[in-house]
Amino acid sequence: MFERILVPIDGSEGANKALQMAIGLQKMCDGEVIILTVYRHHSLLEASMHIVRPEEPEAMDDMMKDYAKQIAEHAKDMVREGGSNKVRAFVKTGQPARTIVQFAKDRKADLIVLGSRGLGDKEGYLLGSVSHKVTSLAGCPVLVV
Image (cartoon, rainbow, N blue to C red; front, side):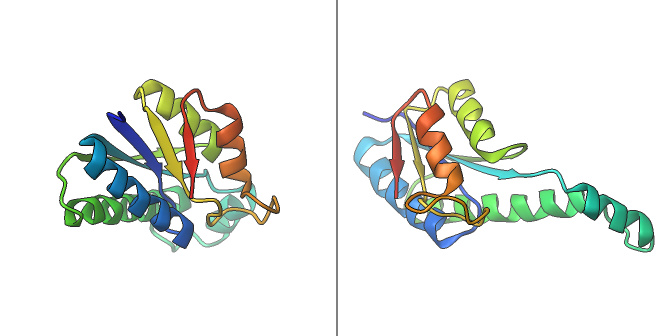
């Protein structure tokens, strides 16, 4: 039924619930789980703070990318603990909803499973802003957990 299940992960409780749902679906379908963590480029304010504090060795983007990698690897481990080795993890930078939708298209995902609320802005009342945008823009079915 679903050969490629895309699960966007941000480390939030909602994303972890979505991952658990995807693991269950994967067992039924014997498909692949594709983990995607998207981080945003740091703001101009953060960039100016980095200039003021040159003693900090890492750039903010590098720290954000490293953290995103940790989240993706943890999610990958959770899938393996769930009993499957059919899992890959990716880290991308960009606007989360559009990056998720484009990645799903590029990877020919059959389903996107994502949390209803993540770590993003507190926009939206029933759905988080990212989940709302993904459901509006995706070319494949989306399961919001």
